[in-house]
Length: 194
Image (cartoon, rainbow, N blue to C red; front, side, top):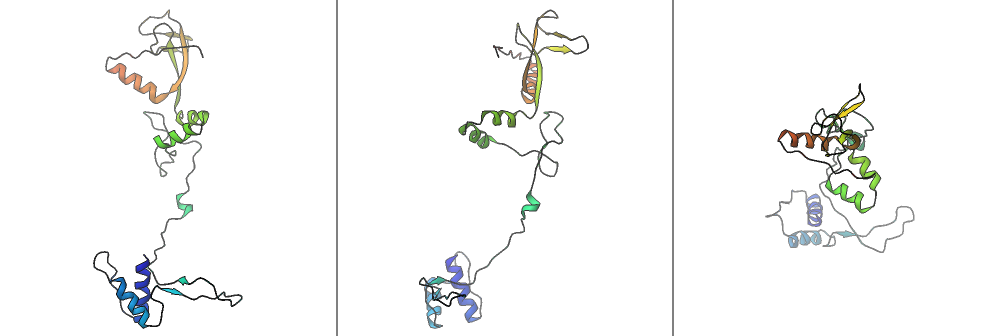
């Protein structure tokens, strides 16, 4: 970019375009020679004066023309916030993307940052946006079925008389357990004291 600035300065002073392509552009030596011929320093620096006091600056300041593109990205267009909103039907997790009023994605690296800073509760809160309270058989550890009207739980393995407890887990994990059961793999949860 420094050579581009010197090239821009030479091009503006001489009034013709300078080849600024990456592999076959003008050589730096030639650009410096043109600046010297026109009465400027060959390194592109200028003597500058303070506009208020008229004092000369001790340092020489590098000045020249360069191509500048202002990006159209504005903060007001990028702003995105969500406290509650739509969720996916299958996983019960927040939808993805700003256009769908989705949640902000926390990936693996963000997860490691929370762990490194010891923010365990924030980590749990962020990664349990889809929590579910699931009945589990105390005897065998299988996900049980609970009838809210009769207020009675039933284990598909041990039967109706088995004791059932409720545990909190991510709905995505419950979905994984259900998918494993559909493949005839019966995952059992080991329950311990809270």
